[in-house]
Picture (cartoon, rainbow, N blue to C red):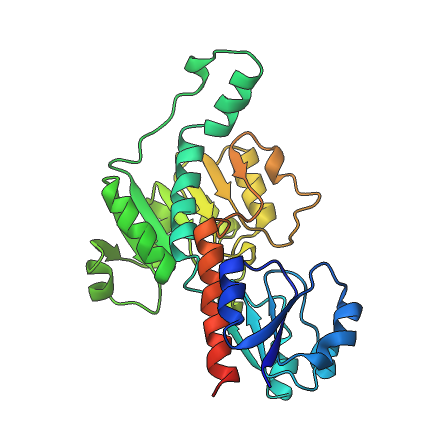
Length: 304
């Protein structure tokens, strides 16, 4: 008898076809956690994106459940402790969105540096205010990367192609690791003091909470900008708002926030902040790859 997989989120059709090679697949999106818990006993695996949550109640109800697949990077919506307690494997696809997020970081740098959102809005209103939008080049600027994993390295490659100097801070890497990417390894406060652009690429760990705080923002040049495409957890948003509102730094490009969806934050209302709703992995290519990677990882577990 074939294993049964529940796709509780919209997964790309090519990934579903791959799953059908070894399992029966039911696509049931838009169900509540209670509704999902009622049917979990029928499935050997469940696949989700950032929603819905895979709760303890759902896992406990999954009497046949062997694996939870997250078609994406973060596992914030999966109760990993409950899964471990039941011996249920949890797999994800952190490699799927590497290029998409790296390109997105560069896009935010350019958007802030060239005032693209404001210039577009101005033209939509029928104005031709070229002189109001004097930007900066990336060429010759120093990019400081906080975190130098898969995404940080891809950002470094693209920054070098723009003619930027790259410095990095990551306790897990050596100077030799950085040299492979024509980058220089420095202490974290040196990044804040010397970089023209700071780009954050860290996971949500206790050691990275509010890594960007009032003290470090005060170290930045008044002409510097900061970009975050990793986790909102890494930035003290109140301190960042103050620095931007008082023009202590030039600007910010933000894709992620402490609480998502973003509600009641004053950050999007600032003229010098480009805020978008967590779009880093929102490309066709990343979503196709995320689905396929997770389906293959589930295959390995269900057919072992």
